[in-house]
Image (cartoon, rainbow, N blue to C red; front, side):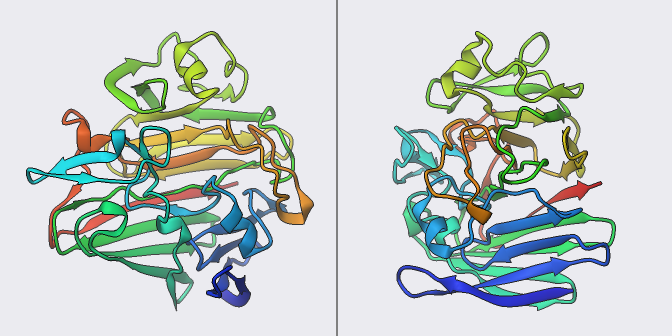
Length: 338
């Protein structure tokens, strides 16, 4: 079942609706037409994603909470890339780098919504030149909640020129409840033997590192924050985890497993992407109060951003993020709760 209600208006008067996917066990996932944001995710009576009660609060924050990010999720070095022998210059909105589609990315757009059975389809057309990207890009994102508490997010895109695409969702999860605070009571497993090394600006250097013997090793379940402050260059650069893990295998496969040790809620993440950025909200510290007047301090939510590799347009050794004109970009991510 899909419910629809008016959520509010943006500062420039755009109307925002909220659609809620509901299954027979009472799991509820609410999505806004503003940014395609996952505004709440209630499982066993616990809301497990950070969020806000008003559109204006989403507009004020710059942490991409709950949103679809694009055209290119994560960072592009120096805000520039070359495609078909032409250079494209993007806004630098993260130090020297371009991040999550720029200043006015997909997270700030009003998406057109259609309900098809128990699925919510969101559509957005990104015009040629928007934020510096080439080509008119037609994007569709499909949200679906099944009866077994599997929440799927499916991304599709086509363009009329060669371009680059890398889409993901930027929800911050706290499996003990969105207002619980610290991630200390979380256990995480990541199915990856390697990760992409970062420089001091959280941009991949191009080098691949093995997780063995480092605080990046989550091949076995481990307390999420137990090693986060260790004397390790990768953690010190970003004040915690903000890295792309190279997930083992190919196709739709397990990426991560997380458990709230207080609530007992477990979430598994599956995708067909090559990598996953885990971000532990190292710079969150929101002054804006969240839902139900909750406070969201540093490290109060964790993102599992299934994705292509950051800065892949500038790293030929990374999987390509190029979408050829007329071809289909298609990827899927599953969040399974129990």
